[in-house]
Image (cartoon, rainbow, N blue to C red; front, side, top):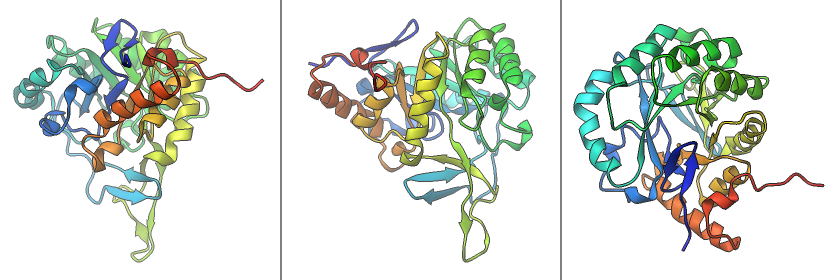
Length: 308
């Protein structure tokens, strides 16, 4: 028997596999398709205080070994989430996965507003701040590309909540460790590494960008080596846990992130073509662990060693 339990700070997860924000809706859309006991958590679609329409279509395009998207953080807003989505999430959460609410705002005040709106909801296990969307024009740039801005937003939110606070960081930076330390210093309990990589696809026939937004965020297996390296870097720079994300499509991929030092993993793009991907990956991870002669997922965390 393989023990898949892991800890992210003081939070125990049944497995290291979390359904990532942005590709798993609000979780309830997958009810009946997934064995929830195999998931460590569900990170819901990025939530803001007010509804957001996102960017115009087309806003998704396939690429070699990945996908480019510029959804623009479309969501239904806090009130409708609490009224229509949270009741279904309560029954899912009771089956094992922790509830992680990914949230965002266009200003520091907006971040505080959404956190204040969620503060009284007992079922929320984690708030995950999205400072790293690569195509949110209202931000004037990626918030998590600036250590000062990152620290300011995290500190403002930390002052308003006692909840576990994870901060999702961006690969679109010169030095992710500088941003990671700023988030840690401002009160983050853990860091999610990483969000999508900025990119563009040109439609040759129309001679125009394939996305109406122009650029978008690249996800999928193409970015996994970047993400593993950034997890490795971040783990070596901070003392708080790191959650790995980026191109995980199989149990062996998840094992890479754990070995690089990630306390847990988020599965995103794989869920778009396989709704059961997070549960499947958890099962595959068990087999990988057994094949390595280990009995616990926690034994893989940080076990990778540099070459002599």
